[in-house]
Length: 374
Image: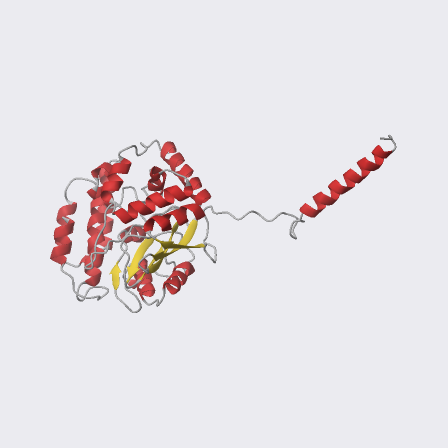
C-alpha cells in the first residue's frame, strides 16, 4: 500500500470518529449543567409513584415482584446488612428461618420464596427487608403475628423507612379474583395475608393534612375511611398515591364501597407521640426470640413513653375495662413498648368498632378482645 494513502485514511478515520461522538452526545439543558439521574433516595414522594401489577398465586406474585424490582431489592438487602453491621447488632442467624416459617401462614411463606427466587436473593434477605431495623431509626412491622377482626382476617404491619426510598404501589390480583393495592417498598411482604374478600386495601405512612389532635382520631384511621369509599381497587390505589408523603406505612383494610373499617393501624400512638420506635413491634411480644434483638430501654425512658402513651390515648380507652386492664398490665416488668403495641393492636380495633365508640362502627366484645390479648 503506497504511503501517500495513509494520511487520507487517518483523516477519514478521525472524521468518522468525531461524527460518531457528536451523534452520541446530547447537550446539557439550559443552565449549563446536565440533568441529574433520578434518585430513589430519601426525599419527598414524586407525583406519580411506580405501579407494579401482580397476578396469580402468592408465589407467582412474589416472583413477579422480585423479578421486576430485582436491583432495588438487592440494593435494599445490602443496605440492611450494612445497617446491622454498623449498629453492632447481632445479625439474625439460622433461627430466623424456622421461627418465621413456623409463625407465618403458608401463603406468606410462598410469597417470600417467590420474591427471593425472582430477585435471586436468599429468603433471609427478604426477611431482613421486613424486620425491625437495629439502629432504632427505622422500624418495620412484620407478619410474625396478627390481630384478627371478627371475620378472622389478619392484618399487616407498617414500614417506617425514609419516605419514597424504593417506594412502589403494588396492585395485587389474586388467583381467587380479589384485587387490592398496597403502598410499600421493594421486597416488602404484605400483599397476600388477610385479603378482604369483599373489599380493598391501601397503605400510607402519613396523611399530612390530618391532625390527630384536631380530629381526635389517628390520621391513618381517617385515611382508611376514605379508602372505604373507593369503589374499585384502582380508585383506592389512586387515593393512596395522592398521599404525597406516603412512602410506606400502615396497611389499612376496608370492606368495600361504603363499608365499615375492618382493622386500623396498630402503632398509631407512635405517630401521635413522634416517639422513635426503639423496640420491636408487637410481634416481638409473642416471639421472644425476636424480642431479644431489640435494644434495652432505660427504665426512665420506658416510664416516660408509657405515661405519654396513656395520656395520648385516654380519650380512646375511656374509663372502662380496657383502661383498667391496660394500666394494670403496664405496671408489670418487661418491654413496655412491645406490650403496649400488643394491647393497642386490639384496643384500636375494639374501641373503633364498639357501640358508641369513636368511629361508631358497630358492637364488639371487649371482653373477648382483652382475653385474647392477655
